[in-house]
Length: 475
Ligand SMILES: [Zn+2]
View (cartoon, helix red, strand yellow):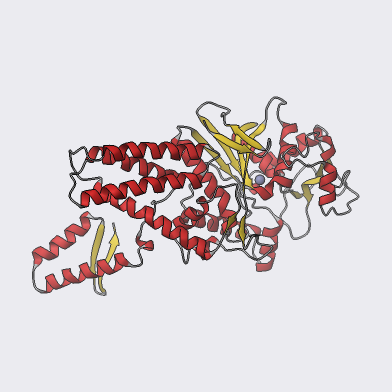
């Protein structure tokens, strides 16, 4: 039974999907105006693991993640560089994909953009005005009327008075209540704008996610996710916007999951504090799988302290798991009819059950990974027995290997070429093999030269003789 911590109820709850066999998820995406930093990456790695695990449990998963491609930060960056807002958002959407591909984050089913969802956004604002939840001003702005929504504050657990006391509220005579927030902003010179019933303008930030989630998942869906900094005001406002537009018996998002911050020296990592590290920069020193593994070694709701040492520890730990993955690659294809691995297969089953149980307990990846280490140790032990001469048991060994691979697939590791992580060993070995082949050719020993070329081809490596020398590449 899957249980999840629901921010809305502040407790762990049993998960029951809205539709049997299906899970629908909306996660707030990035504002593409800079290279994603590791704090940006955390929710997407988290949801990627959740999606993988739900797929393992047999669910058909639909996952939507937006791009806030119309935003002050994008417009400011465009003005600074003298390019269009679209140049900036396209560039950093590409940067987002590049970083997430490196972290083995699978693509969403749909990546809606604000600029491509304008009709739905405007139509939702019209509904809110018609139902008394919003009002247009003479200046062409539209505000949400927080006092009209009795449940306002339900997610963050704050009252309007608390919010007002905690916020730096500008004096704005056009607003009915200081906490009323913009659904539509009238156009200003030099800013991109779209036609609307209230004149040219662009949407406020929050309305897009209400409009997009309802458009792509329907008026009720299973999970809504994002960083815990989005609980207020963003997700609070999403609920306030969406609920008045849907039937009273519908629920909008049913489970709200929020991941913790990434900290540096116990301070929250953020662009504004200038203490952030981009994924791109960390990738110069560590592979994407190490970064991913580092993130998943901590439960998603806990703060995650970032440091070079922690990354190096993750690298060492992942390398230990990878060695076992290689042992499996070496042993699994072998034949052997002995019965020596029956205990190993039984242990593997136990570890896999414990792995699943950890994931079913609010997606506890940290605990799940420790089960993987448990199985790794047992596989190593068996490998040593076989190395020392014990007869090999192919059937039971493969059962253990399958359990290990299943865990790796959920965690999302061992999916990339190991070349980048092997400290140039592959290159050094290839140079040696090519030199032996060259020597064989020079000695007119064609049999050996051909044997090397054919053997490499079988291993998926192509040798090319060029005027500039011999090159090799993966087929
Ligand atoms: Zn959002």
